[in-house]
Structure formats: C-alpha cells, structure tokens
Image 1 (cartoon, rainbow over the protein chains, first blue to last red):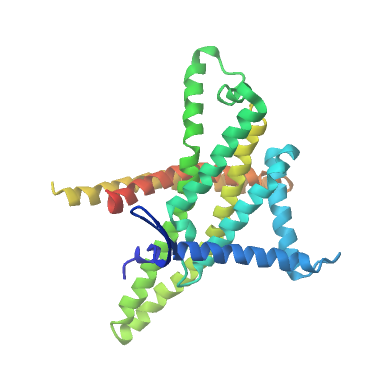
Image 2: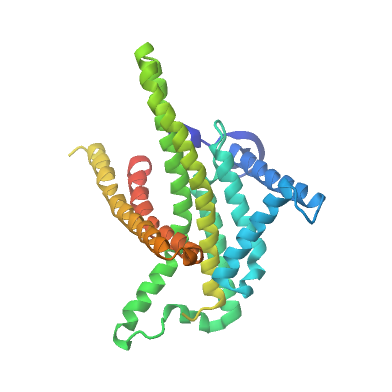
Length: 248
Length: 75
C-alpha cells in the first residue's frame, strides 16, 4: 500500500517519438480530456434548451457563470471582464478535474506540479505582458507603493519585487500541494482500514473508525477541491487587477 | 550521522513550519467570524478578502510542506 502509487503516470498509447523523448497519451492526458468533455457536455446541455425559468442543468451553468463574473468584477473592476473567458476556463477546468480526482480509481491531474506550474505561468505571463502593453513603464508603479517615506522605499520596493516574483511559485505549489497532501492522507487512512481488516474479527471492529474518518475526509476533500479552484481563480483576478490598475 | 536519518529528521523539522501557518489561518478565520457576528450584513462583501488572506497565509505552510516532500522523495 504505497500512498504515492496513485500519482504514477502511465503511458496508454504512444503518439510520436522525437529523438529520445517519447510523446505518449498518458492517464493524465486521458483525465484532462474527460474533464474537458464534462465541462463541454455541461455547457452544451445547459444552453441547448434556454428557458426564462432555468431548469436544473441551466441553473448550474448560470450559477457558475455568475459566481466567476461576480468574483472578477469585484476584484478587477468592469475593465477586468475582458478576461472573463480566461478566468472562467481556469476555474471550471481546475474544479472539474479536482472533483473527478476524488472518485476512487481515477487520476488527479492537478496533483502533478507540471500542470499547475503551466497554469500559474500562463497567468503570470498574461499579467506581465498585458501590464506592460497597457501601462508601458507605468507598470513599475506596482513596485512603488504610494505614501511610503523615501528612506525605506528601496527596501519596500525590493520586497514588492520579490513578492511579485514568488507569485507563480506560491500560486502553483498551493494547488499542487493541497491536492497531493489530501490524496496521500486519504490513501494512508484507507491503508489503516485494510491493515486492521486483515487482523480478523477484532480488527474489523477497529477498522470502523478509520473507515468513518475516510468518508469524512473525502467530504473535506470535496470542500478543498472547490476551495482551491476558487482560490486559484480569485488570485488570478487579483493579479489581473494589478496589470489593469498598477497604481496602489 | 547517517544521511538518510538526517533527511528524515530534516523533513520532520520542516513540518514545524506548518504549525505557524495553522496559527495564521486560525487567526484569519476566527477574526472573520468574530467580525461577521458583530456585523452580519457586511460579512458577505468581505468573503473575497477572507479567501485571499487565507490563500496568502496558507502558502507559507505549503512551502514548508514542499520542503518536507522534497527531502522525502526528491533529494
């Protein structure tokens, strides 16, 4: 019962080979495709029969739209709404992929740091490129807070620059480590059930406790899956706000 | 000292940092709850700030967890 085993990448079928690097369709790619298919079916199903009084499926789509739109509008202003498709895609992708990962015997795409780093760098590069394109050199105002005495300004600017540069690290590692740690915890408690269960009748009695705890932890994981998707989206909104309005 | 033992001890020490993040996250949620009970009508508007503070505080604990994981599995 190795708790790390569940994160193993398996090649399902090879696609191409460049030099020594093999490009293959992996279980990670499979679950990304499944996640996209779920989002696509949800959105297509919700918009196929549009009604003034929404049905169940349409309500889900409308609620997720309103949820992301309100988050974006409140933290980046109405100007930020041009980034709505970007933030909505990120939020839905992370949410659906996280929730799929809770189902036993599936693979959690976001438990691999390469995926979360790609998403976080996408946000970071978007912020830097859009910030310089829209504000020019005024983008550097981000690192010079207003109202700071001149003699501590170099120190404050240095700290601001460092915190700006550490953003993609914390942005990606937060999602990755939360999913990784949550799934390892579930696996360890699941292992206790199996170990106690192999002891005989008394073990069965003892195994009830970790089994109940595993169920409760799965519920907690569902909360974490949603919360981390929301945290990723709201941090994206806050970073985009810095690009749109760089003055503090 | 045996290098493998030192690695495991280091991973254990790195996890102490998560205690600090636990204190921070508890402070944030506790103060939010206290303020929300005083003025429930203003609570909904501050939910975004709550999550932002939670995320930034939690990141520091995640960093120490990352160091522990790196020591255990990567180095």
